[in-house]
Amino acid sequence: MTALSKDRNFPGNVSGGLRLAACGLVCILWIPAMARAGEIPSPNPKRIVSINLCTDELLLRLVGPERVAALTKFSADPEVSTVASEAKDLKRIQGGIENVQACGPDLLLGGRFSNKETLRFFSRSGIPVLTFGVPKNFEDIYAAIRKLAAAVGEPAKGEKMVAEMREELTKLKPQEGLGPFSPEKPRAAKRAVFFQSDNYVPGAGTFENAVMEAAGLRNIAVERGIRDYGRMGLEELILAKPDVIIFSSEQTKAHTVRGEVLSHPAIKKALPSVKTVTLPTLYLNCGSPVSVEAVRILVKETNP
Image (cartoon, rainbow, N blue to C red; front, top):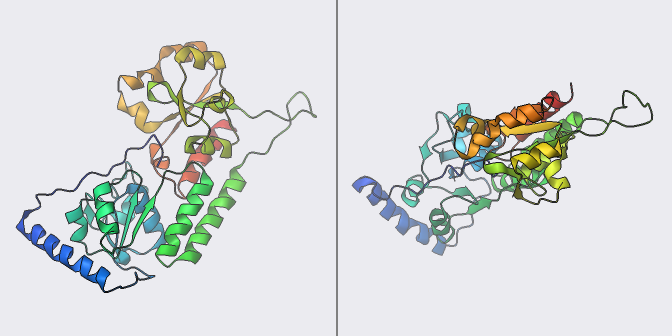
């Protein structure tokens, strides 16, 4: 998940009623008993629970719905989830301890910003727990796919997914063409900046930068020595004279005070020929095979 995205995971409702409380008590008693019995987690879990939107997406690309016990409540929202159609008929939960217990999981998946109390509880209770970090590049996505594929007993499917992503990115990578006026001088890559609310720009070591590089763009923030996320004032942005300015759809639609800079009239006035591209935040929320679509859009919009 990138800095653009929300965690979309909230603590569970601890006042879930007598029925859920009773179930929770049974689960609390059952889980340590299983751990004491020394059972080894199944290599092919059948009741997998995900409490992170990004693990929702990877999971549904690796296993059938019959093996999924529950996903996050955002998984079926087409505004934020790329697997909304696959998730619409599956159980969705908030991600609290009692919510997860009621599902009787044999594998729990979470992310860096998921409910830490839930992850900690189950990691100490004998239920296998896998957590995933925020990808900084496509290699991180490949590693996450392989990690989850191995855990659910689908390593071959994971390798196929990685191979297909690599192949697509290779096809999309713009080849250096020849300049229109000098047959011997290669055309320089276009200089771009991913401009975000409150003047934030992603630099080296961010997934946004990896997407830009995959599309054959030079990140101005990296040229200026920015690592992770830094700020670039409006005047600085204009003086940098980018060929391309990239926005995220979620931020341009939000109309927040901090986001007003994204539509500042000074940008169009000072940079009348700049190319602006708005990427659907849907493709940036999580690192998954769909991340290739963000690259595809940039290539299409910046290489006519």
